[in-house]
Length: 139
Image (cartoon, rainbow, N blue to C red; front, side, top):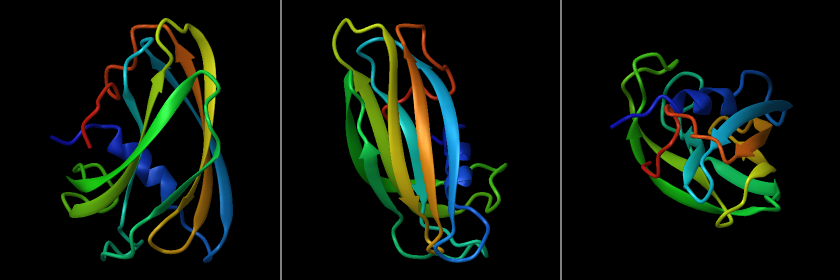
C-alpha cells in the first residue's frame, strides 16, 4: 500500500540542470524506539520514464539512533507528478536508541534518476506519538 510519505520523494527529484544541488529541511516526529521511513526516492525521470536507481548517501548520521537503507518497488500515489507508476525506490528508515527522547538529525544526499543532487536534512523530534502519515516500516 502506498503511503503519503512517498510524496516526500517528489521533493528528492528536483527540477534544474544536471548536478544542480538543492537543500531542504524536513521535520518529523517519531515515537521512541519505533522505526519510521524518512525518505523514499523513485527511479523516475522528470518525463516519468524509468531511469537509473537513485543514490542515497548519508552525510550526517543520527547521533541517537540508527539508519537502514532498503531498495524495493512501489506504485507512486495519484498526487505525485508521475501518478500511479510502478517504480524502483531507495528508502531510508530511522530508529532511535531504546528509551531515547529528544531531538536527532540526519542529512542525506540524494542523486535522482535525472542526475540532480539534493541535500535533505531531516530533523527528528523523538518521543512523541509519531507522524501518523509516515509511521511505517513498509517500502
